[in-house]
Image: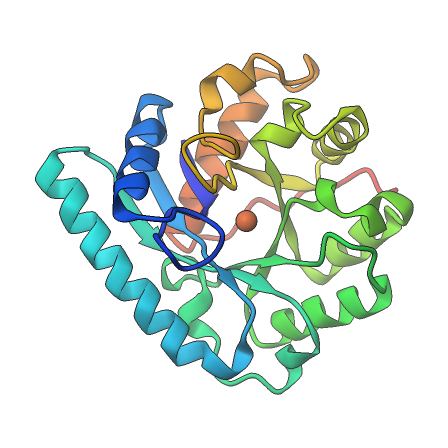
Length: 247
Ligand SMILES: [Fe+2]
């Protein structure tokens, strides 16, 4: 698996709190057949883009060095989880926030109810700037549950979607699991990510969770979501075009 969504960098957000914990997360990733991790710290302050990128890059270099010296055998790539808000219209160059310098950018919205029309125009701005937004954990947004047709609009703009492994395994409750499964079965989802924040709690122990996926999500689908599509992103290749089952 390539994990496109992970808060592994120490002291950048609400993720890992130390390099020790980051190393433990990397070891746990390895044990769970995750071969590469993209570090995606929360990005919220559009006035501090350069500072954010500099800090993130320094931490990735150091963490990769530590992991190399310990022989953990996993590499950490760079990304960000970009919080979409009105600042996107006035923001400077966002290139440094994409996944490994590709066209793909992991984007998130508020977990509290939000204005879905605004959500669409923020994503549109990201598309207009030449990026492909990957909407993080759509299954977690109450505003999406209530207005699932927003997913159609985002898809039509060119957005792609990433579901959290834990949510698909039912760890966020039945309603979230059903919505996650529904999004996948309708064809809207290209990626499963761990969104891991720590070693315990919001962790990256994927293998035990896969057993709890709804049985309609078959092995071929899991392989596409965890390996084939994330590989394309890592190589900055285009994702497959396909028809979806609109809400
Ligand atoms: Fe996240």
